[in-house]
Image (tube, rainbow, N blue to C red; front, side, top):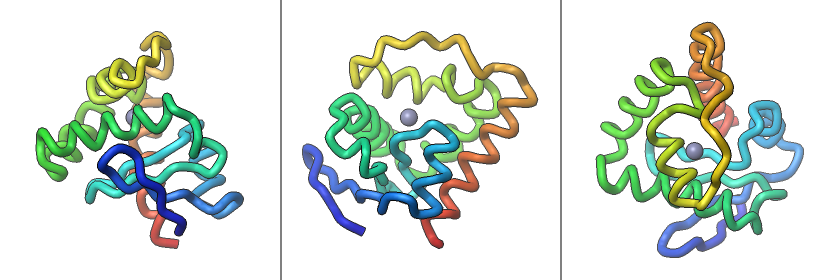
Length: 127
Ligand SMILES: [Zn+2]
């Protein structure tokens, strides 16, 4: 996978139309950070300054908390608050200057599905 530098991090550019790319499109995600700290960015977002800054915000969160503590807390928050209201997502959006509101995707059934789909996305990287 092609690499690109963003600040002091390395991001991987996901090949267009790969299974991972299509899954992230379905999830309406432009990028993805693994529990091991690798950041993946969809090709169509590789010059999207807000998306890159958002993912870098997660890199900084992982550096502060430790990757595995961050991951455990991320998924616990995801189940509790859903994606948009996950404190790590709110923080990453603030870091990136993304002013969208945290109002949608909060029903409990959706939170569980959303969390499961986010975990599945991590597995698709391997394919
Ligand atoms: Zn995020």
